[in-house]
Each structure stands twice: as structure tokens, then as C-alpha cells.
Amino acid sequence: MTTVGHIAALERRHQELDRMIQTETQNRLADDLMVAALKRKKLEVKDELYKLQGATRQ
Image 1 (cartoon, rainbow, N blue to C red):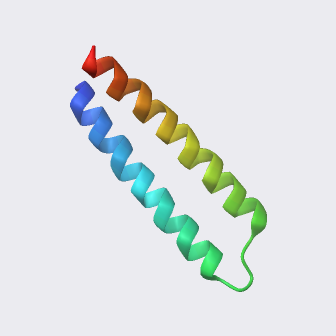
Image 2 (cartoon, rainbow, N blue to C red; image 1 turned 90 degrees about the vertical axis):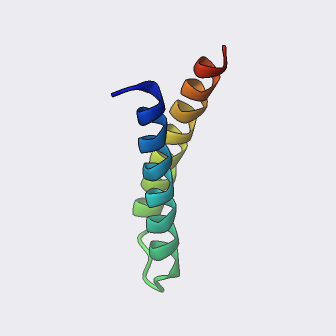
């Protein structure tokens, strides 16, 4: 997978995780551990995304 393709895949994954977090938090019986895990994963994806975007600019 090219770097550009990898960045696009990470952007899609980030959006997907955001939707999952929104869905879970709208639930009255939201699982706090699940939400925390999703937020951690979203942050990991965002960090990797920034690293790749920075590498392509150099």
C-alpha cells in the first residue's frame, strides 16, 4: 500500500471510530470501558496519521 493509500485508510478508520464513539455515547447504557478503548484507538490512529502526513511533506 502506498503512503497516500495508507493515509486515506487511516482517515477512514478515524472517521469510523468517531462514529462508533458517537453511537456508543448516545446510548443511555453506554459502556464507559468501551468508549475509553475506542477513544484510545482513535488517538492511536490520529497519531499515526500525523506521522505519515509529516513524512510525506518532507
